[in-house]
Image (cartoon, rainbow over all chains, first blue to last red; front, side):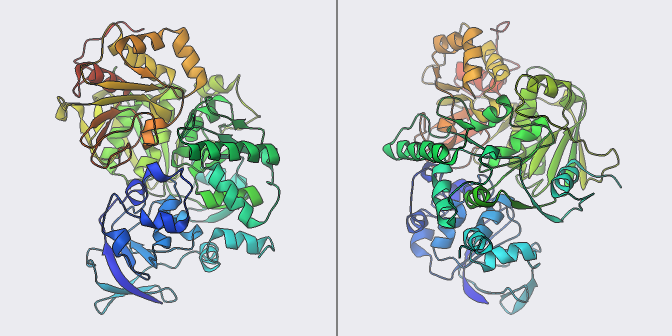
Length: 163
Length: 423
């Protein structure tokens, strides 16, 4: 169960505005990536985000490039989960692989506004907002196993007996 | 009920008689591609604690994104990659100057019909043009593939895009794919396997099909397939690295959606800033001032694209104040372009012909934009900030539209521009 404050964005938030191409081949730590998170979408985000905050967006969140830093920088910024109507498949995979929770709320996210408080119950598959409950589908077991291990690298280490 | 291309490939790779849409399979890709991001991937691989790459013969690494290195940091990354491939015995390594990965893999015969290919680059969908199932993955996934050779994939539902009629010169596959993306949106084919079919696709060259499959990701697709045919086999004949077995969808395969287009009714299209699905007929943006024109990249940097552009540039000079960059997709293409006189046409017109690479497309180097500047480009993305300043604008179009615009200094309908007989 997590509870956090909402940062609200629209449809088609692409990877270039989440983490710009000019940074993608520069070696950076996750904390340095977090300083550039959402730089070309919302200049107030990187400075204002608090641990446990939740990003809520429309359809096709994370479209564009395969760059994993789009998920890494959000995770490192302290964001606990991203809720969207849908995700690009690459962002979805990268988020799981980085251990960042993603919630697909296909019914819509227009009722959420910036600074609202939302609760996510992963066990029950329910998002609670202003007293109302919205259901989301559970992740497939193969995918959930990766997320529960903290991401793909810890998951593979465990599978190979390296953990 | 028959099966789609995606179902048939994934069933074959999973060793199952058939797979259903939504079914998750654990598979071993035939080819795994990475580029300059291999430096970061190698570091992640080291964290797994496995010494040796499993099956190094399945990995292809191409340096193309920041080539030749423009900063000390990029140079360090390239050096680390050279050391990594030497240590791990990865023979399919293409150093700076060979070309852009999405041209090198088809050209060097790794992208083959029926193969399952993954790449740590979103435009990995390109190899679907040769009949492969080909999808992008992330960096952690590529590191995990070094260790295990395996990946999970979900069997996608499929769309069929049936394109009837003939494209009318100078309209090309770029105009067609922009129109489709404009119609269905950047998430119009999210998670889907897209099969391009019909008379217009059959009439296309392999180079033209590569544009469609390359840009399938821009409609959200997992892969973009074109049925392999005589042209595919002829292209691969001197190149194929291995025997291959083409896979075709069953005639009674089930599609979630079938879209139909009439190619003969299509005119030149332009994607306006700052999304690829913001597409209008060229007439709606005619007269828009430009500062830079970019011809080439993995999207439209093939010989036929350079020919299409040269028809508008031969004997002309760029409009005052306009700079033009030409980025051939590979060394082979650059050599052909030199042999056929195209490089001279571009240079005489005032364009700068650069080494094959990705360069300005992702704003890494070689022609980034300042605030307030406008670029018309044959590349595949126009996101805000991608080519440099977040206050710059990029329009996407075909090589013909880009070249005609570079001569005029404003976005121009290539049907109205004066052109020569072809260089």
